[in-house]
Length: 301
Image (tube, rainbow, N blue to C red):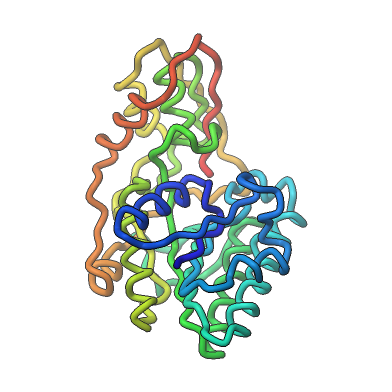
């Protein structure tokens, strides 16, 4: 059995279904599913870990803006809870392997592109620093004998149930319903990765972890950069209603550019992203529920 924390989030809901179709038994754990399933509660985590062979830790304050607005909540969820989880794993008589979902934000503003796993970590914001500290906790747990692997993700998209203010979801919603796409930093450039590709990558990492492998850290990225303005224009091209694009300055705490190098994931796990951004955005626009035209705000995190 595999425990998925944050099982109701963008990645978690799709990963759980994917693993079950593959024949794997899954235990879901998410505070939005049950208020008692709170990763900040060590007792709740201890109960959830009983009888599992591995844990995929996705639960987090996952939006940059929310972390900036609530740094203490971010610390408790993204750092302290990770420490509790790893301590509990190490205390099990049969230790489960663990996977920690990190972020491109740990690199901060990269000196070069594309970014590789060995490049320096220099996070710029509260969220990025929390993920870097989570990675450090994973490294210490690995030193203590736990199979503890880290994957770094970049601008995952592809589900209409995702947070409405995430950039791809926001732009797709505006394209489907009409309204305003606000582009905060038109020249900001990011590596967008479809959730289906990320799910297959994490499943491969879970297989490797179960086999005792330690291909960590590894980033699951497309290797393709797209500016936010180009993303907005792409989403609008698939639109079903009139859209206005409004430019605004980039947020002070946002990274301005990131393109990841996908070679390590290919070499270590045999994985590569296969969904072109055009195909993924078109499918997301088509999946968005329609409504009357309302303003939709776009952000980069």
